[in-house]
Length: 252
Image 1 (spheres, helix red, strand yellow):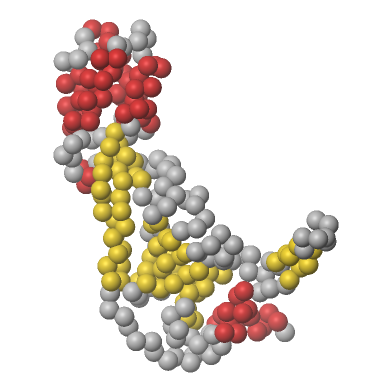
Image 2 (tube, rainbow, N blue to C red; image 1 turned 180 degrees about the vertical axis):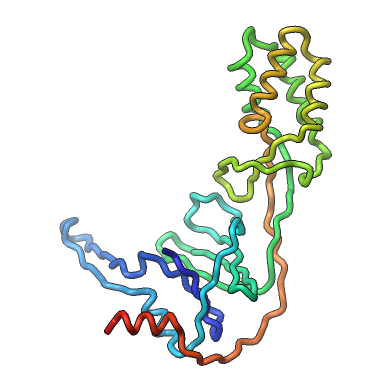
């Protein structure tokens, strides 16, 4: 189980994980692949030695506070999240600058927020899905008219009027929302000017089928706004640590 530890004296952060005691392996280029050297390590014990006599505390990560400007799959990036000790909140920067470096954690003075920079419809996916589902097929003119109407509907929409959905996204700054009932009625009413008879019934079923998930979801793009705060002075607090005691007992 991961454990976020904060040194109150140095303001350093350490993420304790089950991998802290995993050895590192080194291979030499002029030797066979099965000839390698194992280097034993214990990152957590090294942290305790370095901060011996300091006051450590456990921090709890605030749920859904993780943000990053790069995709989840990108290994070299800076991310931010919030944590608390129950009395004070902290902004933590998680980063690495090279692919072969371990992750680093740093307390950031200030706070961060997200600002919505764009709301867009998934027009390419809508077009493909209409062609795939509705038979007999709609004309290209009708499909383009529907997309134009849908885009016009959300040109001046307030993001706070939309309901967020738990749609998986490869990027932490891309969030999906579903249309409200009011916008749904407006969309259906205006579709009567484009589609008639069976075509309208087909487009009505299409809208109801995809209004809560899939191609009719709106994609909002955000950017991270960091606000700098006043730096606090580090206080010397040479209290003995429960974390250190647990480690010492375990070694006896």
